[in-house]
Length: 403
Image (cartoon, rainbow, N blue to C red; front, side):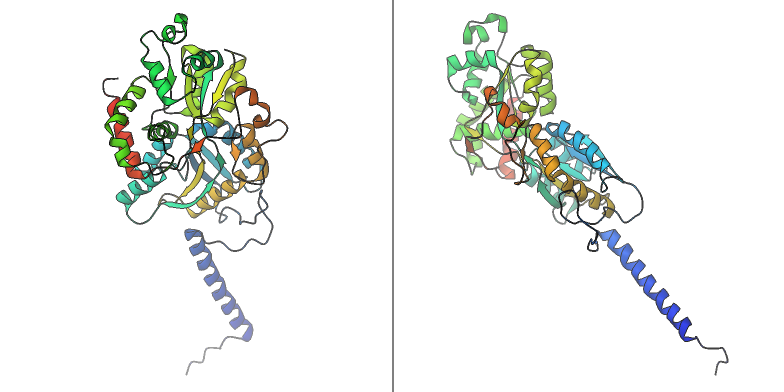
């Protein structure tokens, strides 16, 4: 029998306490690794909803947000405001401007800078998820998603040129634009204005940018005279193929960025573009800037339209830590808070937070009616299936042969 002294009651208590601390530490590390958080009992975030501090206490966190440049001005402002908040004080948000399709491809190719993907719309989501699963297996890489703001598509033209276009064609449609592009005498044939040169219409490159791809989708819906269930039969239809080629071969130089394309139009005036097909928010953001340089712009809504919902996708990738996912969620909640959503309206977006009004003193939806901004929209179209979208892209690529 051992003659060593046994533990006293106090000693047993300390051994028991040490064991509990070890178990707690293991649970904490496991939770931090897999994103498990304990309930927050200390208050709410900027939108009033309670959420835990973004990290496990291991130091500063950096997240990369790949975003469409149509949100550039709003997001840059929001990032600066987030850094001033308690939830954003230990977070660096790296805004990475990328075309929506470019960002999807970058993620599939393993771009470790990106923790959040915020394209202009969910149009390419299904194709992205399919590409990811083919490469990595498993399930969808999207951990969570939320709409940030809404914006339909619009034609935006220099008003003087729009008035002459309307005299000849009446409505602004893709068919009328295709005809104007084919006029050998340009504006001389259209309006007796040879000094205006050729008719110059632009949209972004569909293989890289959401707005360019959506242009093709809405053109196809317009040609088919329907708002849903765009099919492969619609895309491979010979009449549609010839019509699309006529439209797309006349399009002026394409950019991979809607925001950059609009900026070029405003900087260079009608010598660059007579008109573009862009997000309503982008047009609104530049209306006043253009007026002081080259004259007024005119916004025209197409008969067949679609919502760009600017989703915010938190990505479940091996290169993203639990702390980064928490920080991404905190930034998402901040963007949906009422003050930040109200600021989005000033940049031409229709807020995703239903408690935030669209019209108020100083809102462009109240002040810019004279430019053509309106509440009512035309027929709203559904996103087509991935296979239809991919074949539509292939059709467009064929129209570019020899350009």
